[in-house]
Amino acid sequence: MKIKELTLYTNKIAEQKHFFETILGFTVHQENSDIFWIQVGWTKFCFKRSYECYLYHYCFLIPGNKLQEALGWVESKVDIIEAEENGKVVFSDTWNAHSFYFYDAVGNIAECIVRHDLQNHSDKPFSITDFLCVNEIGLGTDNISKTNQQLEDHFGTPFWRGDKARFAANGSQEGLFLMPNYRVKETWFPTEIAIEPNPLIGIVENEGRFYNFQFIDGEIKSHNAVSKIDTYWNEFQDKHPAYLHVGIPLSYHFCDNEKDADECAELVRSGIKQATTHSLSWLHINNEKMPAEGDLAIVTDWNGNPVAVTKTTKVEIVQFKDITPEYAFIEGEGDKSLSYWKEVHWAYYTRELSEYNLKPTLDMELVCEYFETIWPVVDAGMKIEMEPAFSINR
Image (cartoon, rainbow, N blue to C red; front, side):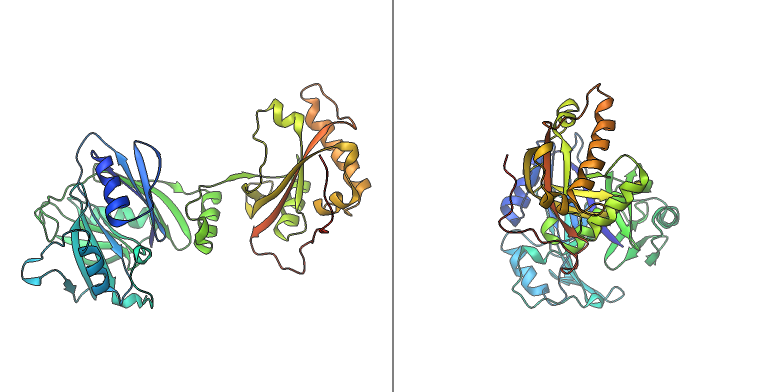
């Protein structure tokens, strides 16, 4: 299991933002004053403003050979919590893990853990990038068996280790829900912070599927599995870390019928179709955003199944009468000829504009959007290469 996204609540959001941005050195993303997030490896870690004070225990996974480096790096920025006779570093033989603890800006207990069974060593000096994920999140409960069963039912994640009367964990070494029974184990080790069933929300991945969930009033409340589009985008981000900070882009299918939509989707997936053409009038009437260089999109088939991620490389406005054979070839449909392009597009614009009592004309302006398929990776032998000298003038 992996914790792909986690949101905790705090009544001191400015202090928490300062801590992660200035003290630890994470890049902070903030759309408004009520929430911010950082990217911790494969986990999007968010803090959201609340009126109440909630305290949590969470844990960062670090490479297996970086315990002492990580300890020195963190200790240069914050105080490490002494674990009584254990000193600053604690070893769990049943979990085969070393860890150390510190407080964040609002008093949450943060942990860095080395899980030796994962054998995830690094040959680089320790840095902020060695926080590999949020590896654990605590769920205070008064019934471990019940909470574990909810997790198994909703996500299919297994009971991992522990005592169902006092303290246990559900998930895997890549991601765990900690389940202390706060009626038996009252505080988070190694502190006197009371364990409570504090609210949180997130997304977990298990066996290739993604699940939204909430933990409210001690209950796991799960939505249905995350949509096919969300799953597809998460898979893309896993394979392309450069896009980890990018939100899910627009998804769409081509054409106004299933046969053509599915054919065009396959042409995009295989890298044959490298352009699409919009009616400028339709975009204006529907207040649709003009495409722009650098735009990302998820192309689906008629039934909404994602097939490709594209990136816009160029946008030009051209009159219908000025579309060239070269451009028709790049659109990649049918026999790729200009006559085919004109026939099918004239028919399409006739259908599209009739809803607004308009008709296509030879002088109508079209938005020619060039794109490349960036996922799945297209075989270079299949991709159409544009002639360097070719360009459409506005």
